[in-house]
Length: 68
Image (tube, rainbow, N blue to C red; front, top):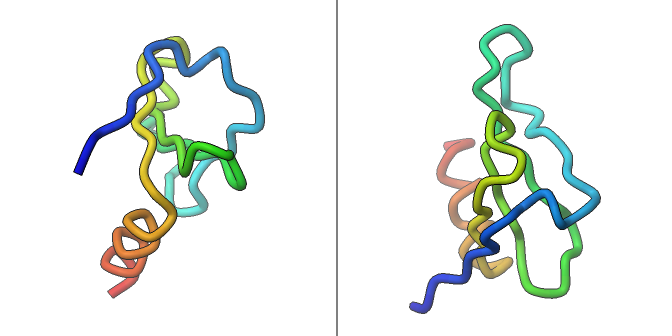
């Protein structure tokens, strides 16, 4: 599997915080829905840091595993 990264995640718009992230600690994961390259994911504490981009199928498996 080839990994896709976006070096500066702040260049993308449409980020949303995960509904599973807590408000108090600042430890949040943000994603962009319906992005043409896949599902970009970033750490909300590092807005200009890198984002990993997952295929929709891999992201779905990951989310299903978290819910289980």
